[in-house]
Image (cartoon, rainbow, N blue to C red; front, side, top):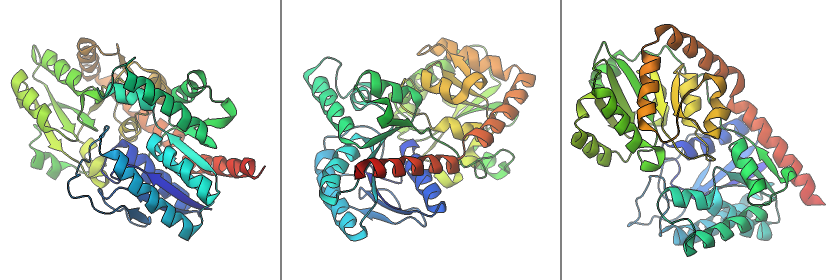
Length: 391
């Protein structure tokens, strides 16, 4: 099949949503399908996957996650780009990422007369609220909630990045269970693996020897729980000196300043933006991973990479984290920085448990979370959607 991917984001920018777009595309190409990605002017092309971009907008350079008032005109440009590409390649399916992509995809499907599959990675109205863009109950919140509901119903089929999101689509937005399929994230366990030589990297970053290294890889935002993570690090510094945190991601300057103000800079290395192709090496520096993300329905793709690198992981107790890690997760009470610190101490002080969990999470990543199997699930959805669209 020919698949037109609509991605209203600065793809590729080394973060979770973009990893899903990339790995889905790679898996589908391996299975023999033709992928065409339409996206913003920012980001970089990934080898082997045709990528089309809107005209350069000199004054817009935001590559971090989160809403922006600039997006409406960027999306208008993206619509016309995708329409042009679609008319040329004549796709069998439109695969739209994020709610903006699904809105554009709805317009495109009417013109191109092909079915629309919406890749839903979280609730639009909830994400805007979590980012502080709107307040719950406000006029803007109600407007975006209504828009989200319309967008959901405009797709021929929705693939949800978690079972929790799939259930929310049914319970809060009235979607039929037959119109929603959970397709969770995966991992390339050949690339993300333990045992990589990181001697030079450790020296380059100045990560101290003889200390337990706790790693975080992802966006550096309040939405991802980084403020709570810094609070937990401050708690740990009260009576421990045998640990070091490697915080990898962007935009990091605000958190460098906060760490300095909290007096914890000496036990943290901030790397800034990490190239996805090198991420496995950086993760291999760690003994334990942490993900303090608070969202209860949005995907948490970093966990798969942690697991594949054999990293026991401390997370807040949310349905999405439970779905991914199962009984192999180390769960702190949601939003509680003190408990997060306690759980980190608990695992680094238990060498036997650490080793057992390390082996178990790697095994689960290899056996249960292959991107190739996710590609096969997508193909089933595409075929089902095309058949239903013919009726």
